[in-house]
Image (tube, rainbow, N blue to C red; front, side):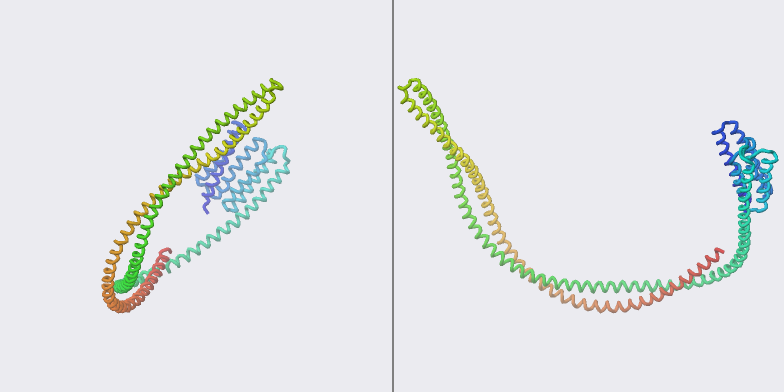
Amino acid sequence: MDIRRVSRFNIYLIWIFTLLLTAQAFALTGTDRGLLVFAATAGAGVVASAVHLFRVHTRVAAIIIPLCPAVAVTILTIIEGGSLRIFIVYMVTCCMAALYFNRMTLMIYIVILDIMVVTCNFAFNSPLMGGTIPAKEAIIQLGMINIGMIVLYFLTKWGNDYLKSASKNEEKAMTFYEELKKTFDMVEQTAVTLNENLSNFTGYTELALQSSEAVTKGMHEMAKGTEEEANAVTSISIMMKQSRDKLKYMYEQSKAIETISREVDGIAQENGREIADMKERMGTINSAVEQGLQTVSELGESMEHIRNFLSSITGIAEQTNLLALNAAIEAARAGEAGKGFAVVADEIRKLSDESNKTANEIGQIVTALQKKASVAVETARMGNASVIEGSTAVEKLNHSIDNMVESFGRMQNYIQSEFESVNEIAGLFSEIDLHLENNAAIMQEHSATTEEITGTMDEQNMKIGEMVNIIKNIEKLSADMRKLAGQK
């Protein structure tokens, strides 16, 4: 166990507590107490560091280093008149002493700590826990620390036993390691010799495999080329037959197209005649629509004149009604002599009212007729526009049909030329198909022979490859043995 490393850890711990306690004292209680705490704790750190630097005997250092903080805290406690936390610090220093895993030094430290506590509490009459805490409580705390120290003692004892056992096992392992090292040396020498022989044999085998693979590759390429050529010839032959069938079908379709073309040409010519007749009828309809539009327009103007006349009649009736009213008034003034005039004036007024009423009714009828006449005029105008558009469309259709008839004539000439070309191509396809069938039979025979040779070469390559793989596995095992022997 590295005792000096444990000592360094304890010294670092002392200096950390020094900084923390000093900073706390300066922050909470002022400069005077801060300096006092720093002097006590820093003194403990300096003494512990000096013991480590001057390489004092490890067992002595294992006692002095944990004792330094205990003494420093005891001095501070006596100066301040006691502290309830002092026994916690004592327990921490006991743990620091137990880190050395030495039963003797731990027991010595416990005895020194007990003597220091008993001396301060009873010999110097300086209660470490304060004057208000009875001495019995200090004895109880000291007893608890000793119980904890007993636990640490057994922990140290058993830990030390484990360390000794580990040391013995390490010695045995070193003995086994030396024996195993010798065995690995022998294995390494054997593996080197085996590897050299295998390397030579592998080189010869791989050379043979490469040569065989080159030959096999050439045969495969030859077989592949022969097979592809045979397939190509067969495919061409099949395509030629399909093309011949398509030519036959094309010939039949061309004949059907010619027949249909003749029929369509006749239909187109008939449609041309019908469209010409339709054009004449559209002209007649256009004239009739224009005449109807003019008649409806004149009817609207006549209705407007009638409405003006009715307005005049209505005005006359109103004037007559007014005159009749004046006559009735004058007759009433005349008395009995004007009674006859009053009757006549009343009849005239009644006739005037009826005339006015009749004129209004006729005016309503005329207004309705004017609206219908306006609708009729608009409809006639739309019909006239539609007739004009229809005439234009018929003219275009007539022109298109003329072009269609001309195109069908040219198409019939082209179809006749196509008949002759298809017959010539069909004859050439028959001759080419015969030659292709002969070449396909020859290529199939060559392909079968090449496949037999290739199969034999593949089997030989497979056996050589298996042999190479076996040798490589042996080389790998040999390399693993050498690697394992090199890790001894």
